[in-house]
Image (cartoon, rainbow, N blue to C red; front, side, top):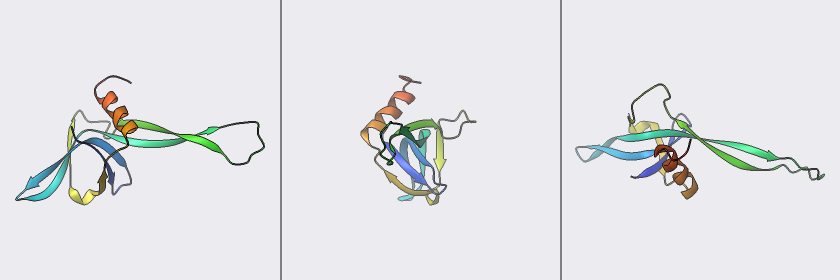
Length: 104
């Protein structure tokens, strides 16, 4: 699998097994297999200290990209991709566990 994180024009971050669709030696699109939206939520840590700086962590949430489809492979035109990057190892592992049914 080639798990990648894609930033779309819509602003969504999508993690999937991504493959280039090539025609006449040109990339004409991407095929996302089992795509999930990556959402970040900041969790605040409340303390009794008088320090006004708010400390917290980021919570990563993965949800299926297009919830109302049974398709597992979705083609995406190249003009909708802003960039494709390698996800950090923890997010990659989280995605693999979710897709392989090892966690909820």
